[in-house]
Length: 80
Image (cartoon, rainbow, N blue to C red):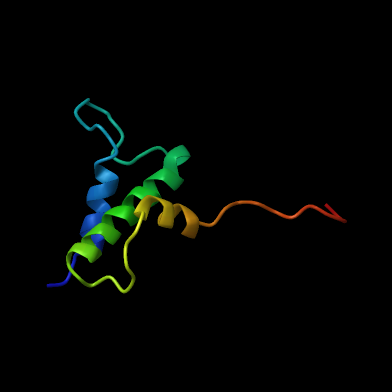
């Protein structure tokens, strides 16, 4: 069986908002983009592990996703 990565990611994103109020946002706020991305990645990784299609052994998925995310850190030095 193949997992539906797009569907899982969409469900993870949709689960981060409360659409019960009229006029509520359908997507998480852009300020929460990193957390939203991590939530989606963790959901997909869990499903891949459960479906035995993951190519790596899952340990602490939250930490693994955090470690894999690009960090906006820039070197300081001459010319900056």
